[in-house]
Image 1 (cartoon, rainbow, N blue to C red):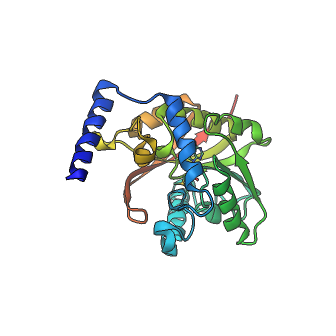
Image 2 (image 1 turned 135 degrees about the vertical axis):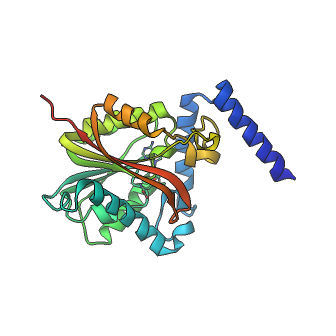
Image 3 (image 1 turned 90 degrees about the horizontal axis):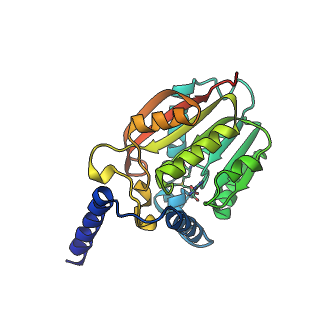
Length: 267
Ligand SMILES: C[S@@+](CC[C@H](N)C(=O)[O-])C[C@H]1O[C@@H](n2cnc3c(N)ncnc32)[C@H](O)[C@@H]1O
């Protein structure tokens, strides 16, 4: 009965959010996101949502390894299998979490920047990369209210910026745009951005939430495909290719879209 009432309250709140514009202020959601990730990944807490190896659903190691392998497979499909191997690349991983991508993309990289809003994720990602015998990991910590700071913390342009399982948990579409602009700034001319988002369909439960960060983070920010494509162009990218993943059984989630985008050469 209690769950039933809770569900009615959630749906009503969702309708008010979507149709009457009842939402929380941007700065509150940003502060809540920082608090959520700080709290979650503190020593001894559950790092599952930050994709820490061995925790929560990733107690099954094949899920953890498989998730990163899947991102690499899609990257290969979009950018070509030889792109990473052509020369040692400077790679930046926005929201690196526990390192599911890092362990697949860092080998052979000239430098692998892990960018995150918590020390715990950066330390865990570093641990996973070092366990491979690599010493190219560079942690970059910033506070959630100031994503633009990342561009000031890195002094050389990157060849590739990737971000997986992060854009949907950013505080808002406007915040996502700030991140995309910063990523654009971080890239070398003709550098690549490989960004995964969660896409909206026309169903209410696929739209962005604008309240209750800790309960709704998995769908905090969703975009229609063409909306993200347009936003990327407005941020200076030339979107190249798109890969859709309607269902992802490794983390029991759905509606992922991967974009490969290029930073146009400055004239
Ligand atoms: C679900 S994990 C994703 C980890 C990894 N990218 C992957 O694909 O497995 C989300 C990570 O994003 C971080 N994060 C949350 N908000 C962020 C933000 N605004 N910018 C960068 N990272 C953020 C969290 O601290 C956490 O480590």
